[in-house]
Structure formats: structure tokens, C-alpha cells
Length: 222
Image (cartoon, rainbow, N blue to C red):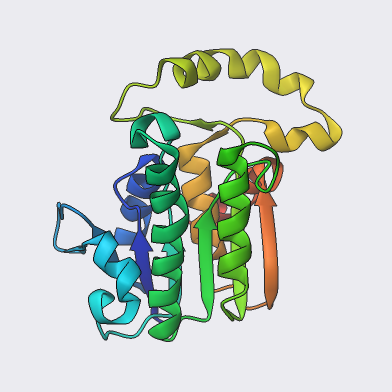
């Protein structure tokens, strides 16, 4: 059975890996929304226009599963308002576009601690709540700890954290395991595993479970 996937954020750390995995699947028809398309599967999109008109801008083609790997940092965005525009408004617009085109499932990459104190985590929690309230049959929220992998832009603090992760991760036992690092490859493989799941409701997946989901996907040949 063919699954029609609408992906936003396919050029980022997780998104590039997810795009690579999905492009090899004969049972997936992938439409990727990007500001600057790099291949035939990517469609040029003005995300600000998408916020104003999710259905008109995203197009009429039907969708089974929507996925958002969108995300930035306050530092990269330059201001809190610009960060919120990407991590809240754009993500919500993609979800609305997917739902309007028939998607029953939406998968979104969020952050460990979403909904907690601080502007960054508060915005993450708000967009999770907004997407969940749209009416999808199933929502999968990916809440990884530190995501390991080479980014296109320089993030010195994150680079240091990645170097320390092998030393710190073994200390994160019990409930602290959700803060453990996880590779971008594992997050992408976990998302592939979740595509097409039908058990209804909102499902939150944190670092330990993401590793398990990724391992299952790899064993299945994802």
C-alpha cells in the first residue's frame, strides 16, 4: 500500500536523513516543501504565505501523513519573534495543510522538556498543543534530547555538548534517560517506523524509545 507523505524541514539535520530514507522506499510518495528546492521531490514554498493560506499554497494533492522536521534556534533566527514564527507558526501551518489534504497522521520533531520553563520550551509546548487540537486521528511527537550529527551551520556550544555526550549519557538513568543524546540517523529511522501507525491519539516518543524504534526500522530494512 502506497503512503503519501508531506514533509517540511527536509533540508535540516534530521530532515535530510529522513528524505534519504524515504526516497528509497517504493511504497512512499514523498512531497517535500522547501524554500529552495534541491531535487524533483522538493517543491518551492513561501512559508509565510503558507501560514496565511495553508490549503491554497500547499496544493490540492491528497496526503496520508504529514511530517514536520522544522526547527531553528533563537540565536539563528535573530529574535524570539522570528524563532516563534518558524517553530510555531510554520509548523502549525504545515499541519493544517496536511490535515486539509486528508492526512490522518501527523509526526512532528519537538524537543525534550517541551512545555517547560523558558521561551524556547514554552513555544515547543504551545505548538504541540495546537497541532494536537487540530483533529488528526493520530499525532506522534518526537522529543529527542541532544541530536547528534553534522550541521551545515556552526553551533559551537552544541558541538561541545556532542563531544561530552558519550561521557554524560551513561549517567542519565531512569527518568533522566529522556535527556540522553540520540543520532539524527536514529531519529529519522524512528520516524520512518512510525509512518502509517494507526493507533489513535497523541503519542510522545523520547530518546530511549527513539533508539528502539530506530532499531526496529533498521531490522525491517528501512
